[in-house]
Image 1: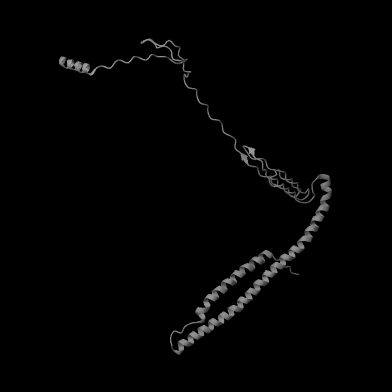
Image 2: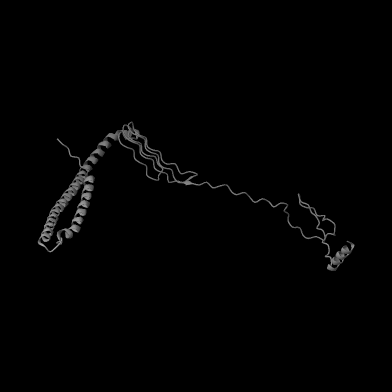
Length: 253
């Protein structure tokens, strides 16, 4: 007894590909119809006329045959597409009762262990909701993989929030993957250095009486500083006196 294994997706993809091939061949035949069926004679003699008529007859026969092939191709593609649809409908109709029966059977098997241990005997654990940061559900005690932990949506200082833990796997199963971390919040940098105090700064004192010439001010200076009296500026020398001194120096020399 032979068995047939059909993939509806592969059949549908093949039908689409064959439709493209048929369209390309039909377009090429349409372009070649006029130049091949209406060949002009090379001359006015009977031989040239007979040759052009012979080639035109062959071209017309080819166009008629290509029309039959195109019709067969379209029918084949239509049948293939209909077959793919029938297979998909049959699988969908058969899947619902089987899934319902499988679910009822698993619930009956897992009910005692769920009541006693809080874990199913067979089956994979449930995945935590995305962004919840919760832990994934534990897998079946005998067979089953742990559920995936939920990713954290909380922001952590310096690093993201911790994702949920993966669920425990069964005897023949693997643990669930941990949830992803949340977004990280950058830690603020150190504050800048404060401004250095001005050297020897002191509040301005009210102006006192004028200090006699040549005498230093007796007022106490701030710590680390000295007070020096400014020297009196000499009066400007007249220009005629400078010229006379230069003339006397010249005579002496």
